[in-house]
Image (cartoon, rainbow, N blue to C red; front, side, top):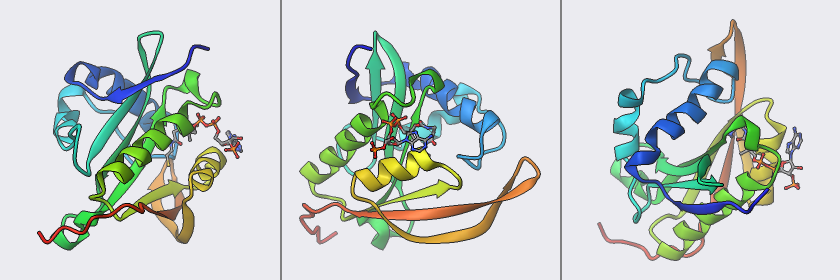
Length: 175
Ligand SMILES: CC(C)(COP(=O)(O)OP(=O)(O)OC[C@H]1O[C@@H](n2cnc3c(N)ncnc32)[C@H](O)[C@@H]1OP(=O)(O)O)[C@@H](O)C(=O)NCCC(=O)NCCS
């Protein structure tokens, strides 16, 4: 497989990002959305990211096809949470287990570290998801704790483990 090209998302990527995400909405417990999105319904989510600042959306392209994405979004809305982000990563199902996830996620964390606005990254992993736990652990996340049976999908309850990683280069902002 040729190497992935990692870059910030642009508007034209949105249909591919929705297609990738909808696969997991419909077929897995790893996201707690339960109904697939129309592309237009995902626009407000997409507009929450920018090529600079704490809320970023990176895509991996292989052979000119979008193979996955990683994002750092708002962790919680209240302003004192502005130095924390929630990170996530989704690959097209045919692109898993080839190192694309670690490459995307490392690029995202590298950008956050270089910019220095973010102090902590958090990731919620619906269990079981050994690949995601391995990915987050490899990239320096540690387990904070588990919300037990916090979600209900496909007729059963699911637990979510939350992982945390320091983003070391924070330059404290006074705002
Ligand atoms: C989770 C995901 C991003 C990982 O990306 P990936 O490119 O497939 O990851 P890799 O194959 O390079 O593997 C990363 C690590 O997971 C391990 N791993 C992969 N699949 C595994 C599995 N089924 N069981 C156990 N470990 C697994 C690899 O051995 C590797 O471990 P290492 O870093 O210790 O060597 C990707 O599988 C994915 O998109 N999954 C579906 C969506 C999802 O679950 N997103 C995360 C939501 S929290």
